[in-house]
Image (tube, rainbow, N blue to C red; front, side, top):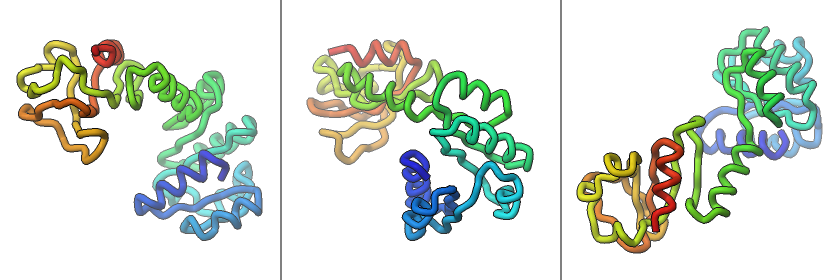
Length: 207
């Protein structure tokens, strides 16, 4: 229950899910006791401890151990051996992620790498936010270019011309609404767009 695990657990709680937090640090366990459904001090590299907690009864399990590579891999191996149905694991490097995938972890996440990519696109100035769906398909938030102001999406035909689609739009980043062919773009509007990585990045560079 470090920074990543804590943030993830609390967001799941906000979404209405029941969350069991496990950590070997008594201080972290007590600190999160009032924030999560239940917290338990336990050794996540102990098969007996995980079995006693009924870990296989949960819909999903997230291994958020980041500072101890060996413990992260061992915990994942035990969970897979126990038959966990939906296992997510934090990876700290490409090599670590490759090992987790070879073990059979269902979902490997790279929080530091993913955040670095998002921030890079914001620092570069082309996008206000950026999320990779996979290696070739992305979503981004961008401003409406001056050349598109006062025109509807039906007129602009972004998909045919640029290979991207507009998912939603808002004025000045407030009250996002699903985009329709009749949506008219105005100065100060923000767009949520999706499409192949190369095409989307080229679109965001239009001024």
